[in-house]
Length: 125
Image (tube, rainbow, N blue to C red):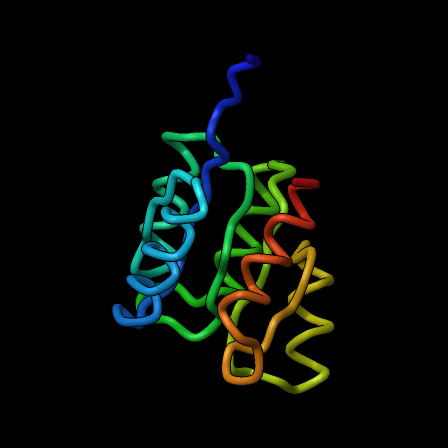
């Protein structure tokens, strides 16, 4: 039986109940999960570990998701980033994608199971 390494997910989300729900659901799905509560903390994690995918909120204290994306881009990493936000303006989506976001998901209108499906699709699982 082949051994498979668990996929690592970085959640960058300041709303603790949302971050915790995502963390529990993804851990149950077999992922290793790290949670950063703001963009600054997320960047620190990226300097210490390699992740298979990043879930990123845009509206956060200390460093918002757009600034995170700018710094991420400067780090020349190629980890897929799924923006998970309640911002739903086309300009926000276009800006996030221009900065390297792979996908843009509106939290309030996307069930958790669908978020997991997006992650698995992105990771080709």
